[in-house]
Figure 1 (tube, each protein chain N blue to C red):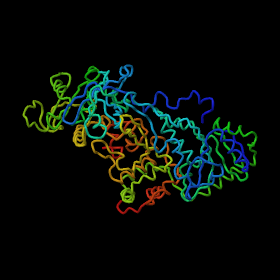
Figure 2: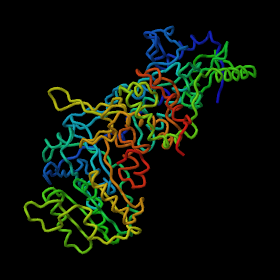
Figure 3: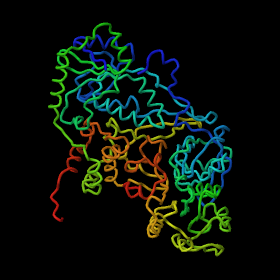
Figure 4: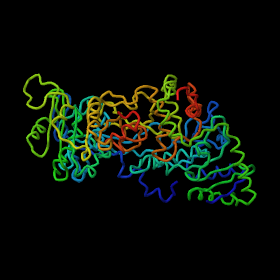
Length: 290
Length: 344
């Protein structure tokens, strides 16, 4: 449906092609825990690097040329811009290829995508962050956003559990928070065989004994493996948290990140557009969500 | 809308003139079935076809296409091969035009798909009406008539085709033929209404779609899904032939002996085992029953929530393509059927 005289000026694929990956340099890559590395990226184009804006809880599509593309949540806070920090566990084809790369190698980035946490609603409320294992990756963005805008939030509590001290993501950084007065940072491990751990030992839900939370004026952001959701959700509901104040970050297969490819569909919502942050109310209304 | 008529004998003349607007593709017989294909001569076109094996979506979302070429130095370069090719799809049924209008909504929105959009601009649509057969239920899906999405639409009213002119390009095609199109008069309008009433009588299948989303919610745990899961082969044929199935996979192909390659997009199906599988090994729709339920659920319930109507257009292709005779009309009938429940 194009007239003859239009063809001359017509560019079939415009500059703002939403599938276009932008090249980014690996600034730093290091092991955080066994099998999980932190990759620090900077977009090659300085203008893009300086204007890239995301909300905590959003994700990017990361390309490793030749291996493919995958969704990865952004672990860095938008308050610390210029670089993107991605916490990546080595599990599949693309992550394996990423682990072969070195500092200064180039990957592709597009995004940010997804809804992110409802920051405006959460402001002037208490914030409870509860994570298990790799679940700290998306929550870290929210954690530093809240700490960098400390006056916009009331009490901030972090509960994070890992199997052993050496399995804890961002361990040194989080240990520094334990002594801060403006956050209640509760860290626990299931077991401490080496006997060097000075924080809590025990299961994640036990940390609720050390937190003071008023469910009607708080938001809970939860992320972790299914077992974490199971026990944390039960505890939050017991405490009387309204279902729309419990925020969950979900993982799905994605091939586009922009609501086209169909893979991340849950019931009638696309995780990439209306998620990955869903309330517990969404979760019980969307079949097969958790 | 501009409405004209064309004497049936003049269709061949029209077809010869319309070639100047692009390569003409139309339904052609192949082993007793029909496919949309480039015509080598106009007499190959079979405008009386029932349905093509693949719907016209293959022209807009090809089964396999290159999105980008990449090489280590330059990064990802968009591939524009073929996007500017001018094609005229001659003889598209109303349900298939309706399906394109549905795909338009998926591939537009906040993130426009430039590959789909470019092809949609360069492929002209000349629609033609049809008589429903035993698999057609487009009327139930409100897709037996389209008011947009075509350049021209031909209705067979006996001695004439009555022609709706949908776009400026359609109008140019009419004008290029000189004076072979005529104005419609009152008698022609009566002919059209007669045709419309006859067509309505011809439907052999009917489904009720009102409150279907609610019934899908209520029957989410129905035994039917387990039964269908045991029957379904997960072959994905229904998705391939569906005019509104748009799921795709994206993968990189590396050229041998270099680090350059292509990023390819290809058709996918929610019936395939890995459709909801994530890197950690978790599969959110592992069992076959859960996958086939998802397909029906997304068409008839999920899409209603997203876009205000089911994405099914009632073309009947999935019914004729399924190797184990899973029939969407029977599935809906079964879900709607009132059962005698003992305990109350």
